[in-house]
Image 1 (spheres, each protein chain N blue to C red):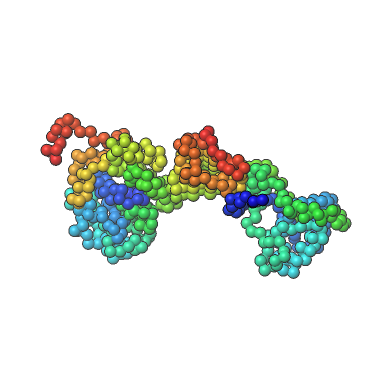
Image 2: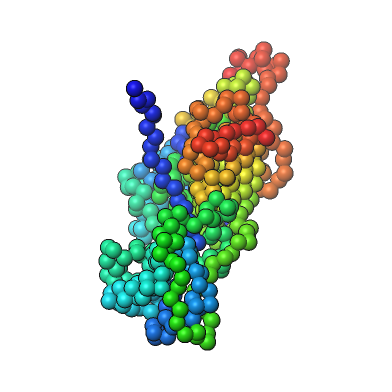
Length: 271
Length: 265
């Protein structure tokens, strides 16, 4: 049975799109059929992060409005045949999305794929609420800082009230993905630590992604970190998060990016 | 002699609820009035000092009828404090005001105020009645008992607390004017809990807790104080005003006269 997953946060710039791409690629490389939908109509980015920006012909709005068939708009990833992308429109705005249209598209995608991953726009307006509307599972992306945590808390409240599942009296499975985590700065008290964030949000932890320049580099290259540099700490954290999404029980370790003596000596030369 | 300028206080408005007896006249009015007289002859002084509300939903007397009915009741020394179930056009300015949103006191427990604070009848009303209510006019004894006077004496206290099993998230607002609110979890920054009675938070209180909108004896309890605002019965305190040493502590807050008192639990 296909699962609809929404990657959301409330606040912008915390790593929703990066995490959508990285988790999507990680799930797809484990053999699942995965489609990523960009709901950030008017400010689309997922195509860039996926390196598919030159192949966009039709988009989500075209499909919702019936101007294009779903198969025409889906872009299959060149690196992973099990990974597809449904891009957002850059020229339209979020009002072009309708509830019926979105639910029809998601219904069709659920027949073809194992995971339907919706990349939510920031905010709590139409785009974000439509992205979460049909979700079975939600990943709340949070940075270890107070404004991000409060916005995430607000989004969790919306997930419990505004989704289709909530309206039917069921629950959306919610997971916390802590991104841009720097253990050293958290230890010095410059960032919230993991326990603080978990205490405030009180939802299960899916993974902790360490702050890493590798992530930014991968995004700029148009390649999810899990494909671009699978051995990096961030990519390993995403792979583990994907395994937890598939139901594996793995302990979440707080990444400390400890370098071996070998790495310290040769690290610079190797990079 | 110089006068000391006292600091001006802003005017505080309180909500307050009272129990009133509802008289619901039924057609034909003449029979109903004779039943009422029979009741009054057996229980003289029954309406002494009691607020009475007139429910006209059944009788539907019209503008003229309302005036006559009020006259009839006044002759029996029944002073009406408000009218329910009437068209606004029936009433003129000299008549008692039209009341809405009245609720049955015995059928829905907890609508009455939880504590004794609100039980005394309003002073002005009881005075005005006592001046003019020596003994009711007695007429012939009727056969029926006066069911029409719905007597509200529900003094038993029913549990009417709201228990929340989940944390209250930022942006959510829990409003429970009828009693206590118990949260098994935390109240997030930017969330709000409003209760008629006390508020109990078995977790961290980071948002706002507004207690005692109907009860100045209400208290706020929390396991860990990180609140943005605390309020009881209209008095409030923002985070800046809270004693620094109580931050992060389990506390309770209550009202001592016109000031909020906070202590570690």
